[in-house]
Image (cartoon, rainbow, N blue to C red; front, side):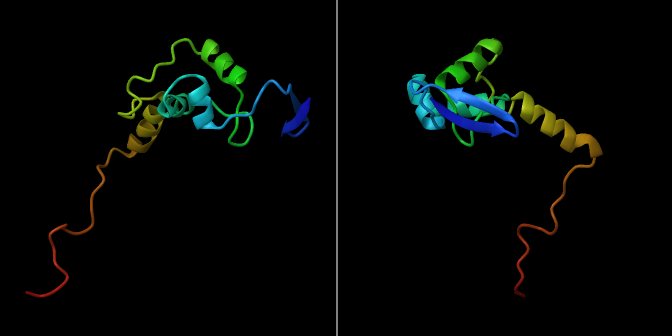
Length: 108
């Protein structure tokens, strides 16, 4: 057994059959594209170890989130992105550029 400290006072036990995987490795084991794992993270999935997770942890998250879909992820339509857009748009004022794109700093 391998013991890994997750947070203060909390210890997780991983059996040797549970391999720690990064995002690309997890996508390969799940037979998915790496963007699938990125979409999972955007939807709220958090790796329980710094930059690493296990297959069983990811599968448990998917079973707890049966409504998870990758549709709209590339267009920024994830729940997290929608919350960020709403928070940014609370001021109501449109964002403006300073200066013109076509203005030349040199005199003609």
